[in-house]
Length: 125
Image 1 (spheres, rainbow, N blue to C red):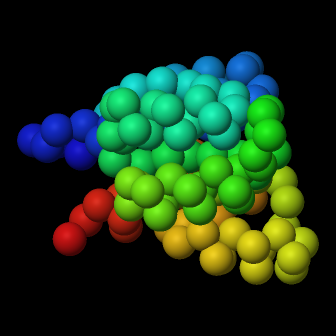
Image 2 (image 1 turned 120 degrees about the horizontal axis):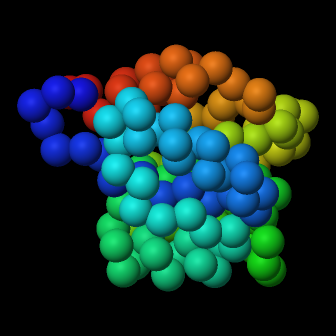
């Protein structure tokens, strides 16, 4: 990611320790973490105010909306791509996630290089 502006990423994760570890790893890879939030409502607000280039979102989050509902609203309102980082891989959840216009779906636990490769594929033209 040399010679380019770092990609602004919003992390939506209700487990703060996991979110901070993820943010630290992403920063080392050259990404800019603009915020960490734990609810769908907060994610919508940050998406509107800070316009991240990418959102990494767990499906199980705090608030009245789960990650799938939140991602759908973010994609429809702001066209910001979402990559799900989640432990849920049942067919019903996968089908719901596909309907949100998400860019990817990575199962926890994941390898750092897997996430990095997925992000790079999104932004390399």
